[in-house]
Amino acid sequence: MAIFDSYESLQILEALGETLYMTGVSLLFAVIIGIIMGIILFITQDKGLYPNKIIHTILDWLINILRAIPFIILLILVMPLAKILTGSILGASAALPSLILSSAPFYARMSMIALNEVDKGVIEAAKAMGANNITIIFKFLLPEAKSALVSGIALMAISLIGYTAMAGAIGAGGLGDLAYTYGFTRQNYLILYLATALVVVIVFIIQFIGDYLVKRIDKR
Amino acid sequence: MIEIKDVSKTFRTKEASVKALKHCSLKIEDGEIFGIIGHSGAGKSTLLRIINQLERQDEGEVLINKENMANLSKKELLEKRRKIGMIFQHFNLLSSKTVYQNIALPLKIAKVDPKIQEAKVKELIALVGLNGKENAYPAKLSGGQKQRVGIARALANDPEILLCDEATSALDPKTSETILDLLRDINQKLGITIVLITHQMEVVQKICQRIAFMVEGEIVETGLTEELFAHPKDSRTKQFLLTSIREIEKTSKDLKKLYPDGQLLRLVFDDQNSDQPILAKIIRQSELPLSIVNAHLVPSLKGTIGSMYVHVAKIDDHKLQELLSLFDSYHVKAEVI
Ligand SMILES: Nc1ncnc2c1ncn2[C@@H]1O[C@H](COP(=O)(O)OP(=O)(O)OP(=O)(O)O)[C@@H](O)[C@H]1O
Ligand SMILES: [Mg+2]
Image (tube, rainbow over all chains, first blue to last red; front, side):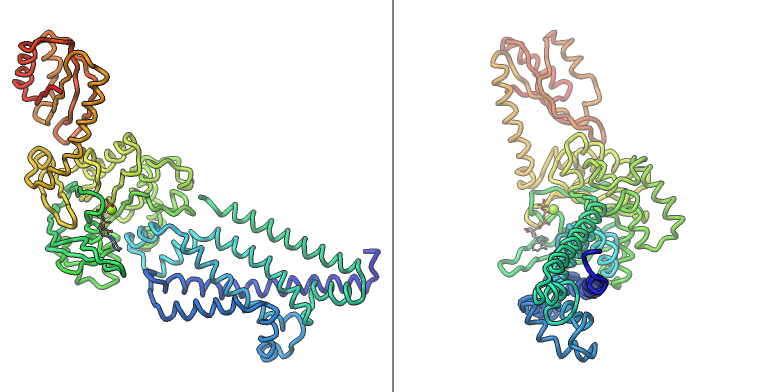
């Protein structure tokens, strides 16, 4: 990177690392929390495996509300929580609670849709085989929904990259932050373009991996 | 033995309540192939699902080998279901699993020793004739092959009963035949009781010893297959069998257009006469060149039954009467169309 001095090169690498860190960690948590919420939504729905109107309605509303709040506002609202959890309102870790809070409901909704798309006949066959509900979820529903769940992860990872860039604006670091503070405020356009290009490349790689995995998993 | 005693079931939805079963009683003996027929919505699937308690009755009792299904705990019921296999119209296989994995699934659920699992799956694959397809995914199989996987899967835990919900309805007639042959084989080899529901009359004619006929949630008639087809007692059963009569009318009309000259006869073979070379004998005796123009024959348990249409060049009334009485002497019902 001869066109950048060593300080700038370090900044770029650091920003890249921060973006990957924020995306990776929040993705991991969002998928775990989201899939659990998605399963609960799925089983508590009318005619589900454990129908429960109250739990279903509460969770449904919570998800809708969280998804309705624009990310940038969620970021500000969650700041106090971030301070309690990470001791700071700045830095990559401080952005995690809001990143997770915004994407977990997104994944919850997606996994519920994925589970609902599994052929009802498969559940019928499972019951006829004498499978209990836990077995039905883990041995029948999740494997059958796997390709939709994986494509949902790729979709969410990509949207998370966008959110991390926004989080950068309030000092979370990462490529968005770099593009803004160095590229835009200090008019270092080379850095602006490079940061943008890196984001685009990451998105492409995720999309590629996602498509590849889905294609391998999907046997329909 | 499966005993269904005075079972009723009503489905209640926001809009309406449907009486799917009204005081149904039925006794199915061990080793029998029992058919349940009726129009769409008659309650056939509901009755079948009552047997393995996928659907709970509102009233009445279901006993399997004298054991009341209502007295089983949740866990016992799950275990009981492992001894009742079920196959479906749309196969209901897991698309994400191979043939082998699909068949192994019930064994995994029953926590069978992995070594025994492997031997069992191999045995089942051979039984249903899917050798070489172990690692194929369902999407790569034909309908008939998918149903074979379904059958193998249903047999994994050595059930005493096999429930078939429209198992051949999604298959073409030829494939249907092979699946029915397989079911009959299994019934004979393994002695499994088979309960099958269908709206295809060929299916029950082909493999069922006894049938029950359902109308709007009621079992209106039960009896030996031949008996019920030959002498339906209930007017609604007769009505149902009329559908096949309507088909006859259509065939007759079509044939008349094709053969405007000469005589067309419709012959009915029941299983008393179908194993003799009757047609050959009649042609020889009457010295008339009869040609077969259409036939609907199905092999039943005792022989081939069904109808056949024959055409003969223009003959006078006297000859025609002679021909008809000739058929009569062989107990073949013949009518001029
Ligand atoms: N889960 C359900 N909820 C509400 N109504 C139902 C339910 N299952 C079945 N029914 C109704 O009960 C009646 C009998 O249905 P069933 O599926 O047993 O009929 P069937 O004889 O199997 O018909 P088909 O030949 O179309 O499969 C129908 O009117 C159907 O609409
Ligand atoms: Mg049905």
